[in-house]
Image 1 (spheres, rainbow, N blue to C red):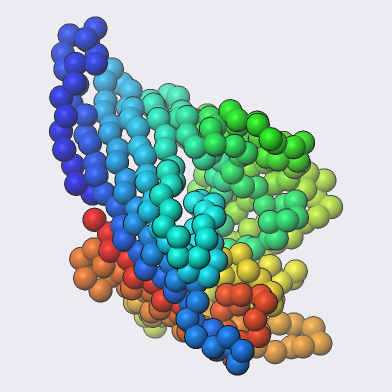
Image 2 (image 1 turned 60 degrees about the vertical axis):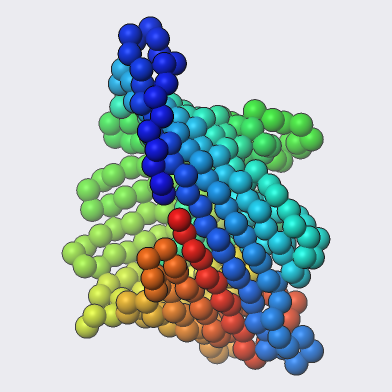
Length: 336
């Protein structure tokens, strides 16, 4: 991110000009998938994406404030791109320009941060190393609030907990089941951390609890309705052994992560080994099948300053409509 100083006299009442930190950054991304299906062998879903992010921030009288916007220019060959926050719909090979996100915010030590933005909510991060996938068409996983304008409160410290709130400001075209209000809470209990969120409209909740004991960690992730009648969970344990990162996940409902939300063949048990930029994982399905359901090898690394490469090969479940012997995904990102 490149920083510039801009002098402004917006706060005339304070008797002095305020220096704003202006940041300019972005990324250029290239991504494609490979399917080994006998009928559709070859590369598909070629995505070329250029993101430009501009932000300005300042501090005055105990307040921090600012604004940020991200513009996305992209083409998609095959189907809609995979970034859920972009919600992009574009015809094959059609160039599209979209305001991906924008927000204005202000915050202080006692209030936390308040913002008006194009996307709010989805406080609990189920992406990354620990993922529980629940079908988005079912109630359970709490997402962002409805509409293109919303209000969000973050990091309000109440002593025993940190809370957040998201409210939609745009209900045009919404239905009674669309998410309009979400509340969030995070608790730090020493060796135990708990965070959860609740959707008032879908009457659903989700959360993650983590326990740290030295070099080992134990995590529980769950989704549920308010009466816990529709309750799903998975458990993960991780540690370091001989220079390798070892992670084991167990989900009785087969809710372990599917690539980008696709989970045609959920695994009950998943084992992952990592060392540096390399990773390997195996998934087993219990029951009558009792077989390896998913496997992959991955290389994900910053090869040069500003250049990262991510390559995955295996049975990745990239497309639930295909029966593939081998799949691969390649992504290259230049960040600036």
